[in-house]
Image (cartoon, rainbow, N blue to C red):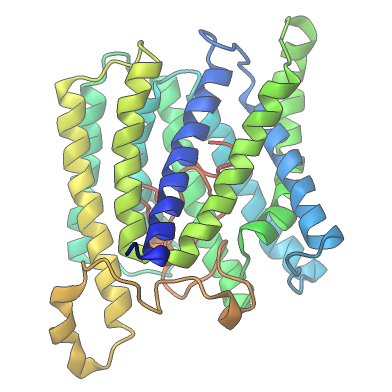
Length: 383
């Protein structure tokens, strides 16, 4: 007999990996001058924001599938606005990187996500500098440097954009914990889109007006409704798939799925985009960085679980940390937390939170660095 719950879990993981990889490759195809040739990353991101915000509005206010949280003007102005600003920045810089560097190299650079998040958390005083974590961060950094050195088509501008986007996303994660969680406010993927997407759209309007609007007025930019509609649908579907994955898997399983997704994405990108050449030094550097990420995730999983166990049971449980099993502390339980977990839930430090690169709207202490990122640029909706 097939275990139906287990089967559904693997189906959801497969859908997440498929959509996460697909959104990144789709965005690259749309933005690249060699393919669809729509070199306007801010415009593309604003389309995603507008579409997702509109869908979230209907789900929350019209169909009432999800209830809105108690949001005052003070909380919105002091919490949602700054978080949206860094969210918009991370999407802007991350998507712009696709114009200059390959998908494979971008995924390798995303290994820096835990490094950036840990540094931001320490600087903001919500995490402590530790020798074991520092050594892991050093290993990740060395691996990324080696991988960058081996990049044949290395582009400084693209690399700066991507790294800047990573640090903007890391700061958003930290602000999510400092500003929202400490006020007892948590958001799931739908309510996150409802509150953050419109505000991010407004922030993106300023650089769009200054940088891309003049280009659109003088250039013959093609606009295919079905291309952009399907792209926005895929991005939104990724957010919903993450919602399902959070509810059915443990933290370790999600991280392993993220690592698998990264390797699949790197391989697929070299097939779909022949100009993406991977060298032996790329692979060696990324493997070194990945070792650091895996060890960092292990430390975080161990710390989170150990903090929830009686002191006398900790030694007996350390050896079981990597078993692929569901823990009540690792799963999304809407009945217990009033449908709020996805965007800023959890009690761990900001350095525990993760984001795929593809869905920065979903940041949870149980989702730290899904693979690199971990459920990272996000946002389904933009990266």
